[in-house]
Length: 327
Image (cartoon, rainbow, N blue to C red; front, side):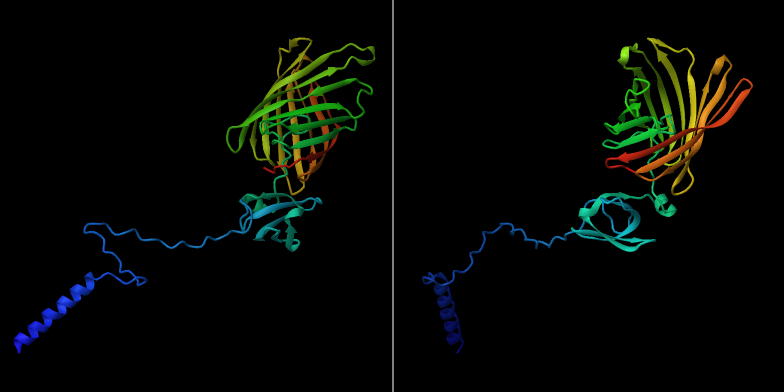
């Protein structure tokens, strides 16, 4: 019996060995070939996860407070609640939920936590006080057109973020005094609060109508500390005329102090040797300002020797154009 079982086992092994060595029939599935001994296993393929698409544009953050300006001139502050390729939806205090089509957006500016807490954005009216400049500059592509005391007009434009150029002329050019002035200014930020700058006001008569051409002006250096709303400026300037420079400088101390959403207190004080006796003169008043439009009223004050007084003396209106930056 044992011999019979052994014979059957040997016969089965021989049959299996012969079947393994027999070539597969045409069309039959081929058995996988075993890799040689010592061959490393092939790397595992990782499944590719689907990518998530974010609706909106770079810089738009749901929950961030923004200042919104439409092409029609409407301005409001609101918290961004939804964004799509076609429109933005804001939650506002005064208007409720507002949806603005992207084609109607002129400018979208995010607010700082301080601005959101106060409920209004910077108006960006700090490039000058009344007549005197500050060390803060227009940004590239921003401009301001201004009418001063009815008969003078001035236009300033930001060539770069650090360089601006202005032109001051009579409202009706060459009527009365055939003169004009250019006002270049250069400034750089040292940090978020402090900026320094230098510039000049160079005026000259045109020589039209047989008059003799003359030129004069003042060159100055400035330092301004503070924000676009509230800041203090210190400066020093020297006058020049006919190729000579004055030996006595004129100092200036000025400030813009925002009182509320629409009103700013403005002051500029000049310290100079008025009448060889020393003295103080300046302008003080109030400015109504929005991001695009402003108007100012100021009074002239002075003290010199035993004299002094306060007189209404200054009025201006201004319009800012271009893609303004509110900080």
